[in-house]
Image (cartoon, rainbow, N blue to C red; front, side, top):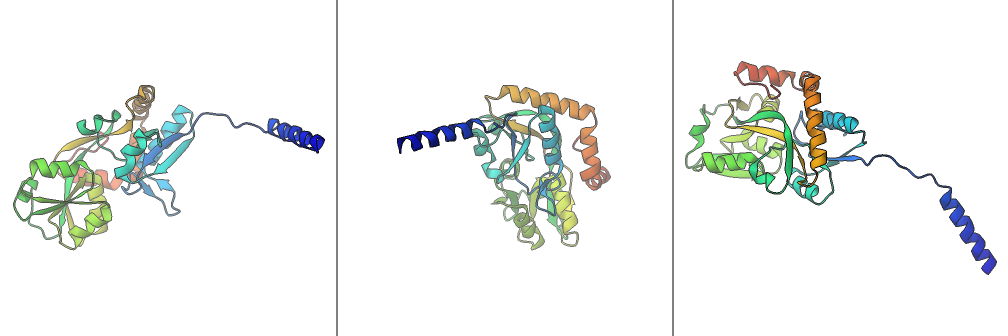
Length: 262
């Protein structure tokens, strides 16, 4: 019995020694929420698609690392980053002083304004008209639009909802006076409900979207900044605009609003 046990142990060791180890660089784990087309979304087969996905692919290729996209609710992205579940956040996230208290950001890859989505027959022509008792404004939970309402439109009521679809429904059903979100998302939703909604694209405030990293990961931050400079110089952002944002670029131009990559 002892000889049989030793033989089995030797064979087990030999089998283990004969296994090939899988080396190579660690994957680049990118956190994003797939609910902000055309930046972060799923295609008809359920695969991640959009501007941010293409940026993530180009970044991973530049770094020589396989790409691993982690789909996470927007409100959970910062926690996922700080706890090491992901390496970066690339999900239409605004670089703000408040967020910089706990995480860090790369250089901006685009500048975008917060805009208004209104019921089609709304008489509102300027955001200042919303600053009145009885006015109801919807905003995505945890976004900078919430802070904007509280600081610039303090007399209005702000209602925070977790999904774009829920915010859009509030406007379509005239349960709210306005929805504040980024210009491109507002355009996308308005085009989906042209008979029920109207968009005012003049920015209430301009913000910078950037890629979030942990405060400790300065080396990765520098690598990403170098990638962004190279990607912009090579026309990468212009190519993405032509593929995903041609309609939005034209719509912004009609209202005299600069495009986000300019």
